[in-house]
Amino acid sequence: MDNRRTLPPQNTLAHLMLTLTALSGEFPTAQIGRLPSTPAYREKVLKSLKNERLLRAYYCDGLRGLRLTTAGKRQLLAAHPERFTSYLSGQVETNMLKSEVTRRLRLHRMAEVLVTMLNAGISVFPWEKTSLFISQPPRSPPSIEYPAYYSSREVKELGEQATKVRGSRSTGLLISERDVFPVYNTGPSVMRWEYQAEMRLKALIQTELCQGRLSSQHREAGSSAIVFGTDMAPMLSFMAHNGGQPYHFLLDGSYRHFYYLTNDHYGEVILQLLCFREERQLLDGILAEDLEPCRPGWVVENDAMDGDSPALFAYTCDLPRIKRFDNALELYSKTGSLFCFDFQEETIRQVCGPRVNIQCIDFDAYERSVFLPEKEPD
Image (cartoon, rainbow, N blue to C red; front, side, top):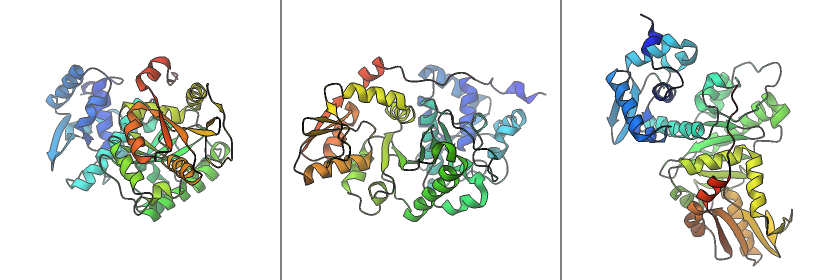
């Protein structure tokens, strides 16, 4: 029997569910609602995959997830061994699944980021991206022409070099045309980092990527990172600690830019703004229409000026930058305007002092007026 015929066709929702589960190990059921299509059709497809015994539900310790059945693994391996062998064979984490809560949470956090990247139009599947993390660097530096996300499992393909960052909480690396972002997911609570492990990851990014494999394109990159959360609440916790242990990693200057994004549609849109500078420049131009040009090197960091009052475009939730702006206004006894999306307003208002005047961007109106870029077909 031809196993290919028993699998759902490629480019279908059913095949996408199987693929995401294979890459994740355990796919959180809460993320099914974020996949494309209608709720009724997603439910129908999921039920069909369970009835065909390709997927099964796994519930333990309050965590609900989907796992591939033995038949599901076998059919994916038979149909696409070049894609799934490294995920569905041997002793790898995605094949030898555990029941411990910490291990399962790690799988769920990585899957959440995978869905956010996928919905933002970023390349996530290994077979669709440039192979960067092979043990021997390519003879000629590869070119990153479209944003791609490499999970921490892909980074481990570096071999011995990757062992240096064991203990890092990063879920992977997002590489755009100009930037390399280590990516974290704190979920609904506040993550605690192992500082030395994260500094080793930063060093690895600099040596292996920015100064090595991607040196022709990313020599000046490596000063930005992204942390995802379920909603805006963790951002409030990070900023409220004012950089103290164990949160100093976000605000101590290790990364000059550390963006806080939510794992939902809001985060997907802002992720596109981070990756596609043309769209970001367009929005900045709209915000600056009634303002004066910025003053580089001025006592208060700014993107534009309203007379002697600085303005900061903070809709990307760059935590250190917001903190620097707020602190400088207090230090120099000035007032300034901070521009953010309306869904961010409440949290940012709580983390900033009275000298910051919050200016809201209507998120829905922004989406209606701007066509975000889509990946062109090959």
